[in-house]
Image (cartoon, rainbow, N blue to C red; front, side, top):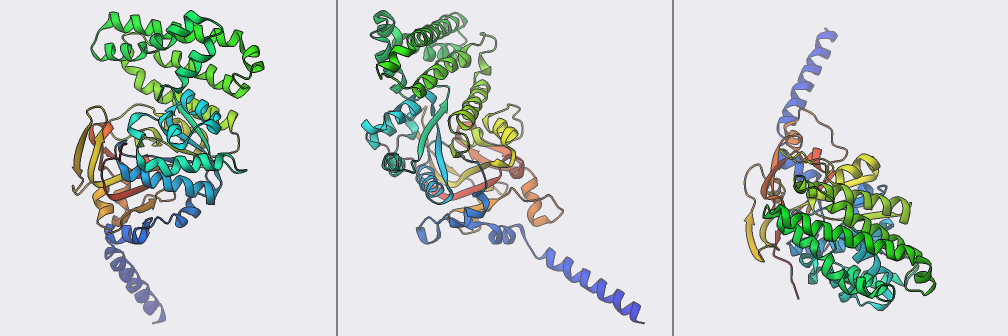
Length: 418
């Protein structure tokens, strides 16, 4: 008799457990497991501590380079990570030469000029001003937030101006023509888009020759430049690497010209690995870039190997890829200078799922989530959609496959430009 009672209790318990599991909806689970990062309108990142404290690299993505809320929130998060979790380097999606050489001169540069001398135009927004004031303020402390860049492209004129000045006493002819010849990069890029092979090859060759000749001149005069305090040893390494990357990133045949996008990501990863392992070994680093650059794996129907893929492959659990999304707003499209309205209310949209939690800035850690048959989490292992302006608009991806964590905001306007 006791045996039958025990069996009955087990069966009843199993039925009760199954019923309780059925009552948990995906939204219920998401509400329970997301962290609100802006309660009552004030940023509070303290609950991220357990997730991020042991990571060497935190990569902060963004679904568009044209949303002011992203710039505001990421600036606040960067400062928190520096103050509270010991992150010492901010590596921004901007020119390797522009950012690193400007930061070396930070004593003579104002926060606003540091912003404008280093960033691509779409980043030069008032929403990052607090961050650049913070970089300037901490630069003279015993705990600076080091500002670095890793892009193979130039994001401003700072590097060019520096090279022109260095070359002037060495080779006036080269100095006078350096800037003009370097802008052959844009001409070759446009020729590639216009399917103009003759112009592409002509300006590619001018650009490569210019970079190689400048690199050789500076190498031959390295000792005298350092002795004259025109550059430091660290400046020389940055200059040499930047010019080498100019060549690597453009040395493509006309037939292979469309491989430049994937090549850029590969070289940005190489630059970041160099910064992480050679320039700033053992320093915890924040990477600021687009979702497409920080992701650990590609969305569906994308076969390119991008920057974050290389970093995840090398640094494994030390690398944390955070995707950032927005439910509704207006995004600045920098190539047309238009404000693009969007609202992601499709049932499969990741932004819509997070919006329904009612939270202003919900964050979900995906890094420890395991696939199972529970309907309330299985959607994170299946295809969702999202809006990424620079990726062509609507994209499809599996959240746990692409990111280690997701942060979504309810609304954003375009950035505030001066």
